[in-house]
Amino acid sequence: MDKLPTVLDVGRAAGVSRQTVSNVLNAPGVVKAETRARVEAAIAELGYRPHASARRLRTRKSATLGIRLDPMTNGISGSVHDRFLHALTEQADARGLRMLLFTATDPQDEIRQFQRMHEGADVDAFVLTSTFFDDPRTEWLIQHRVPFVTFGRPWGIDDMKDPLHLWVDVDGRSGLRQATEHLLAEGARRIVYLGWPSGSGTGDDRRGGWRDAMRAGTDLGEAELDRLQLAVEDGVAQGREAVRGLEAAGIRFDAIVCASDSLGLGALLLVGADVPVIGYDNTPVAEAVGLSSIEQPLEDVAAGALELIMGRTGSELVDWEQSDDSRHRLITPRLVVRQRRIS
Image (cartoon, rainbow, N blue to C red; front, side):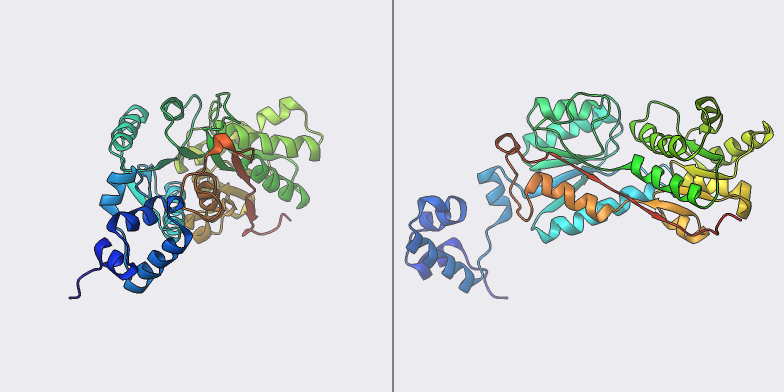
């Protein structure tokens, strides 16, 4: 096996010292253009690649992003995180970046992981998922000036424009408005919203989209909209029982929009083909059973997250405190229709 070229080999080929080669690699601005060109030509000719571990110790940069591997709560909604992680890893690799996966039992444990990895220069920045009201993770990262981006808005805290809090999110309000407007255009009027209890920023946002469309497209009053609004914990069984309770109460409805595919599948199992149901996330399960759903463009989410922390094409952290550019990306989802029209 051929010996890999070293810094000394590059220096000999370019006729310069080892220190000059090191300067070209780590501080090119201090080297004359002509000398730098000779060294770069030697690097290309020899196929020299810097030793990643040594460079990390020297520069305190790892070309690595850290992300928590979320536990899979169920086999339906859990696939969203997996798909996002795959897209993020693939796009990071194209930039010469690596992903470091870690686990944590709760937000405080995740903060301890942040501290350990930051102090060890294991990662350059973190990508956070599953944001929630008053999220202590973002507060810790901002306080300690650790670069990060969140998949999800900063619900419940006043840092929507904080230069240290970068975020990318899918516009769930727009998604549920699309779904509801589609059903209204198909002839439905009494459309149920099946979602989560109040207090979830994501869930409240999606419910708002349904309510916007219902206010604009029907003559139903607020009290009647309240009767058509169901709030349960996420899950197939919970979705099915919530709709069963609505039927038992004698409340008439002719379509259902949901905050997740889990709830949508539960509703679909109860009403069958008699009532149109639209879920959210467009998971493989939704495709398999023919459930209409809102698709989150996770490739775009991953691209937005990397762009916010690394710029459009680079692998170096952006100094957002010196920039007036937008510090967030709000991406519009799309409706995927699979079920029959309303008769």
